[in-house]
Image (cartoon, rainbow over all chains, first blue to last red):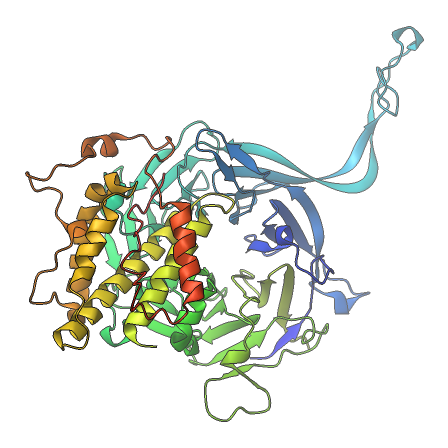
Length: 439
Length: 184
């Protein structure tokens, strides 16, 4: 696959990485016109794609900053003496229904609905206040006039419309908007709650895996998502490596799953770290709703919703790390949670790895490619060169050995445009946007 | 590195990670704590199994280790939690044995008071189990944790003795395993 780079690199030109600038989530909206990123500092930055222009054809489809706002602030839970991080864990866009854009953003405890709207007109000619906004002396008003709207410089404003709080004891890891466009769910380690987008003071618990005795805890929920078309169906993944599909029509509380997707562990691969690497970090329905994709530490798996006992396809992301698990446990990398995404036609999968590498797997041709997101290799409009990791033996000129990989440079969050071959890759505090080669 | 040394190292690192995660922003992460606990249990089971194997081969005879463990751990502050979590220990041990045929229980029974079934009627539990079940979520956890001085001591020992041969001081046997997974 050839990928032409249109690098849209976000902020941070400092040599050292500021922790609050680290991107923690990336999401295209349903049309791909907007791209939202959230970071550890609680900020949301929204990029908008430029319209095509005959005068500047080379700038076709570039993403520029559209809006920046502080979504979440650090809070303190006085009852538990715990600080609540402002880091944005997930952003999900709502489908567009009018001129404004809506998105849900969440940190560990609170989900917020934000409205992003444009203002390009301003009323002028008030009777009771002057142009600077100061109240006029009523005795000086001798006539009435009708205020008129005059054009002004475009201003994009973000306002919080709903705040959904106090519903999660544990840390929220997922949010997912339902296809009914009325409800959404928020997921923490042990529970899933269903919300109505209009109602903030009440939510319904639909999954609860908390044991009566917490010392009997054996698994936690790691991710959850609604079916793209069936508003009654959702899935959630667990730290044990299983995925459960639930149907809300069966019962109010979906503790009993409708389907359980689980693959028996290969005993030859058993190690100290088997439990850690089998924990699923992300689960995504395909756009068609026919397939599920899951990501554990070493592999991406595609499941057919109609077949529970084993995945349809398994793709090794970086199997060369299997012999390095001890070191990865030591430096905490083994706990990294990688996300995975489908392309618009469900034919290609993408997920991140280390050394700023990200991988794509073509389901039809069974070919895969490793690419790197870095400033040195990403000159604008340059074509990305496939990378290769040398797993042993003689290293070729362009290959990189496993021991040379930089494990501090990890790509955990990626996004794929819903209909075009445009991808967004978050590499620590930088955002890279790549698209297909343009002739 | 042989299995026992690796298991020991993994357990000590897990302790260190659990200890440091208590001070991180946002509080303890349940998922991470659970995984660390599973790794520790896995390592400890493998460690004990490997040691029993070596004992049965007559290479190293240390029958007092287990007794020392139980005796040493009795006075710890978190002893009130031992009865609570020992059912978990049993369950985890059984789970590990079921999952991995290589970890079958040895022929001779292990005297390990930590893994005694707390539901035996003659066992005097210092903790009322029902209280735990009905404890509200929002109360801060009152379960005593591993003493910070003890953890530092263990970590320092591991740092000073990277080989951790444990001929004289088997620090792993004296490791007070944090039983409680969750502190919510």
